[in-house]
Image 1 (tube, rainbow, N blue to C red):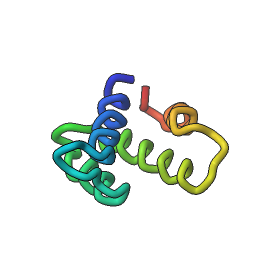
Image 2 (cartoon, one colour):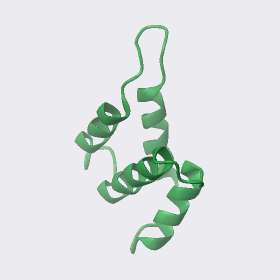
Image 3 (tube, rainbow, N blue to C red):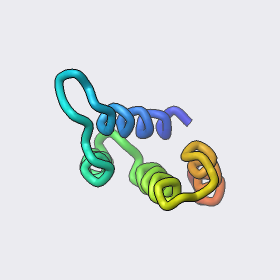
Image 4 (cartoon, one colour):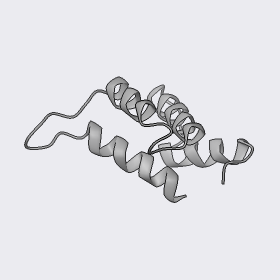
Length: 79
């Protein structure tokens, strides 16, 4: 759970406007997350997160958190 929260927190920090810089686009933030695999993040968790974000932005009825939980349960070896 902590590894997934680290990814979500990083994504949020990258995409949120700050007083000192505008937030990154979704595409740029995803590119940055993928660039940090495997040094900072687990690649399969990053892809699970990216899939959940994509589903959420396509008008899915689930929240991002619900999408992530569903994806994580269906991926072998992800806990």
